[in-house]
Length: 91
Image (cartoon, rainbow, N blue to C red):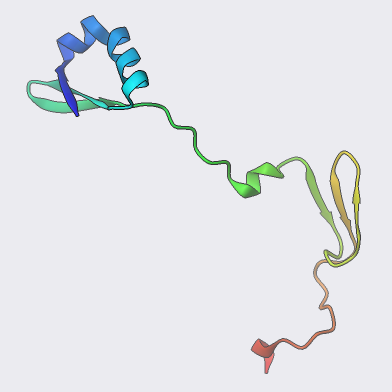
């Protein structure tokens, strides 16, 4: 990892950003010899699977019943009541 003084970083900030983007190698910025910041390439986070359905999924009722697709996914029926199967955990 490349180390640069804060004063050097201030003078070469844009060039260092280009270098980090090109090489993927982070740069450690120091002040009085102590690390104060790290410049590293941006890597987008993986999308949260639950977040994909935000504002597009409405659960209304039984999740076992058939689903209806339109501009949103709508699940009809009761999602709270038991489905009639015995659970081993209850025995």
